[in-house]
Image 1 (tube, helix red, strand yellow):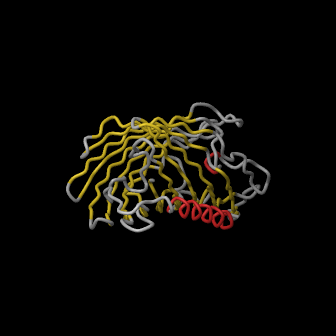
Image 2 (cartoon, helix red, strand yellow):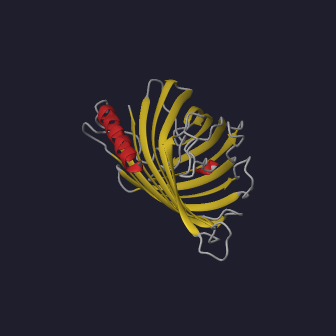
Image 3 (tube, rainbow, N blue to C red):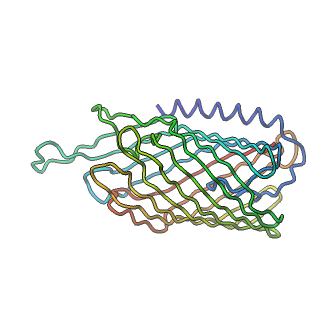
Length: 313
């Protein structure tokens, strides 16, 4: 199911890239590290009249179960397309929408137990994600440093009623959409030096209401910091660390507690400088946990991968 949707989404992203590339200009001048690593969003703004299109593919794997009963492994992938536009210098509007696919293997104890071997069950959910709309405000920009504030809203456009083979609704964390409205603020600082740059971001996700199933995704907050090194006018590498806390979804029979996770990432960024494709950015970032307190959650994080493309015009 996901492979077909992935091909469709990839084709759509290719059309978007081809179309916007026609509007790129020769001699792209911005720094290769002008943007944060691709795993960080809402880190920059645009001048009046500027647009930016983007596409990201993100995937993560969870495994290492603490119990032979319950979830044993889970993978989640998402393709996301985004657009930014600045009608005036002091605000940039942004919107993003994705398609996600979740697969999980869970062991269930047969009826009556009797020491029988747990039975594995495969679960899958896929669909459109919630729509994110943001307003980005440059608090200050001195040329060598800037501070950007974000006020974001998550709209419940995503699919949140995927069912198991037995006809039961899958868990809240398996759904592509939340069914709730959410507030997503962020504050990002960036500093640019000769040949290198650094920055940091503090962000949160606060869910505002219950969905139609009387459930609500868990609130979360994250802080991240990075440093980037320019290797050439077109290449840069980055190192990033992040710490996040995510509460369990509300309204379930059992609260699995707050997951706390410290991650480390490495990334590569490339920008085309000249020719008809000037201004196209391509980036990759991969991360793994340094430490994780999963509370009562059965699975731990294995890795995360983000691949992205951006073009301002």
